[in-house]
Length: 256
Image (tube, rainbow, N blue to C red):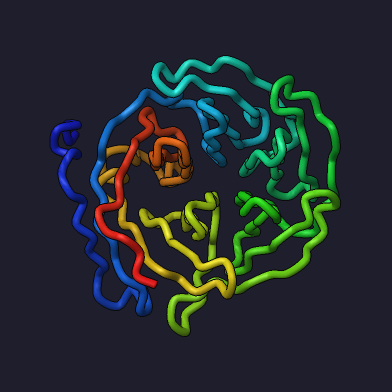
């Protein structure tokens, strides 16, 4: 098991020959700090909102919406979903929490403070990840497509296909909108892809294989969970069933 000190080095990005990453650049990152994380949380979504961390966890019978203390990892508030539901990503827009479900064709809307359900919207695709750009909700369904939704009605106003060169990037999972780009986990890959929202072009890849090597013990406990503190410019990542959450820093800027 690698020590934390060993993680606090630049994670040099290496893409094996033949993996078909396309033409987008590879960016180096460094681990800044680590925090405790519930090892029983099957993390599907993370959000940082006004100094507070929110988390969505999945699996039938274990799906929940949580408010979590970053420093201690303590769950401060929790809403457990019906045992037949498999929760996915979350985002917060205008003090409302939106939570996806995987195959139940519904997106829930909750009051941010009380977790009281305000609405349940029909959604004709699988639900994987969700974020917003200040105007539209942005949703992934496990394909290479990102859907832009009207926040009031949750109807799709447009969509883009994510691509790196001429290769589509599929299995887009947890999403986070950061400084004009969409950051996305790719299911079962130790990479985060950075996407231009106007046309779906991939700007860059982050390789987090060092963290996966330390944290991943089984097939499903993969990298999943991206959170950004826009006020302090802090970027966080974790994974399903990971006992740690990591603050990381990208060491170079995306080339436009």
